[in-house]
Structures are given as C-alpha cells and as structure tokens.
Image (cartoon, rainbow, N blue to C red; front, side, top):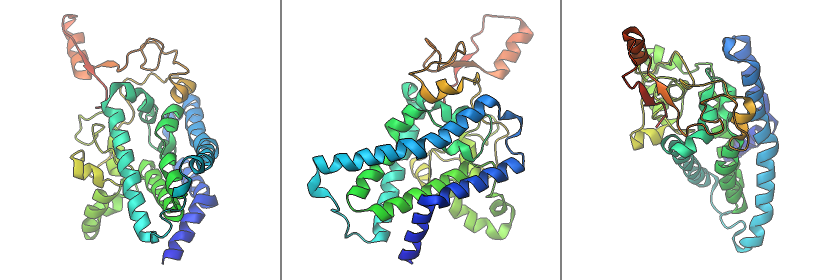
Length: 314
C-alpha cells in the first residue's frame, strides 16, 4: 500500500499533474464555465500565474534551498529518514496545511498583507486556474516550497512530495468551476459521507463561498473558510460556514480590472486604475459603497450620509 501511494505521488509530481490539470481545464472550457468574464487581461494573468511558479519559481527555490541547507545544518541531513511513510505524511500534512491556513487568514485580517493576496480574489469567476492565481511576491514570500524543501532535506522526501501532490489536487478541484460535490448533497444516502467530507477537506461549496463577492445571501463567506487542503482548520478555529450552496457572484465588489502586471508584481509595478488598492498612492484598503445605501442616497438626492464601509475581507 505504501509503495502504491509513493508511486502515485511520484506520478502526480511528474507529468501526471500537468496532464490532470490540462484535462480539467479542457473540460471547464468545453462546458463554457468561464463565460464572458475571461477577458484578455484575465487570461494573461491566469496563465502566467499558472505557469511561472511551478515551472520556474518553485524549482529554483527548491534547488537553492537544497544547496544552502548543507552549508548551514549539514548534521541534520536525512535526520528523519527513519520515520515511516504514513507518520511522515501525517506530520507534514498537518505542519504544511496548518501553516498555510494561518498565512491565508492573516492576509485577510491584516490590511497591508491583503494587497498581496488580493489577486487571488479579484477574478469574477471560479476555475482551476484560481488555485495558482497569486501575486508573485506573495508566492515568493509565503510559499510552502520552503517548508517542503527543508522536510526533503531532513529525509522526509517521499511523504513531503505525496502531501504536495495530494494538496495540489484537492485545492485545484476546490477552485474548479465544476461542482463535483453536488451529488453528495443531492442524494440522501450520501449525506453521511458528505458531512465528513465537507468538514475534512475543501470542496467547491465551502471554498467557492470564500471567493464570493458578497455575504448578503448567507452563502458567501469571504470572512472565513480559509482552509486550503483541510477544511478541518476552519471547523476547529471557528471560521467555517457550511451551506452546501454556491455563490451567484465571485470576486471583490470594488474590482477595477487592474492590469495583469500590477496584480502579479505589486508593489513593484502599480495599477493605472485610479482609486485601486494597487495604484500609486491608492488606499491600503478600499472603501466601497454599499449598494443599498447608494440606492437610498440616490433616491433622496442627499450627500450628507456617509455610505462608505470597508470592503476589506477581514
């Protein structure tokens, strides 16, 4: 069984994963699930985000890390090579995903960090490409590749690679526009399994809620559902919302369609969209206008009220 799992992880970390993602992407496009939202600007942003980290950034960081570690801690190389695969898997899965849960959560709760993570939420649609749609600086500073590289050096290579492969599959399918978890909610006989599944890992229903542009419908919940591979962290830390429904709209309510280069490389490159959080001199957190207040103000023709509220997803 262990050998079988190792073989799967090696396949996914090789050509298996790109083939899987390509097949998923073709399926999403053939079903027309991106709709009219996939403009040229969004296509460039999604494709570069999808290609650059795994093909260039991650390999370079891993290579440099494995060259650097022997120079500073040579005595710890393969220190944990005696740990059985299954225990190594559990240790790494918890350490990796719990760390990322808090990375993710803090980027929603600390205004300065939000702008690094904003790119991941700006798309007005969901799809497999969303899993890697990130600001490159965010990816560089908060990448899990550092933890994986250290664990590989310490002798936990196989379980580390297996966790990476499994996590990538779960996260990608949670972002996918294909709502594969629907049958578990539709058929009563599957409800017990659904109850466990939606509390254990991220599913389209729970993670799509995190990407919703609003919380008004009781389905969207960008103030929680931070889990990446394991949704269990949200359950444990009180940030979970499980509705078994999907939002009608995605993205951020004040998205200006910032240029792809600004979304990828802020703060090095700035957006030209006036008032954007990514523009030169723009707000750390944009104040947005609540639709109901705006409507009332328009009808009353009064400018005395203050309709501004923080649209920051904290």
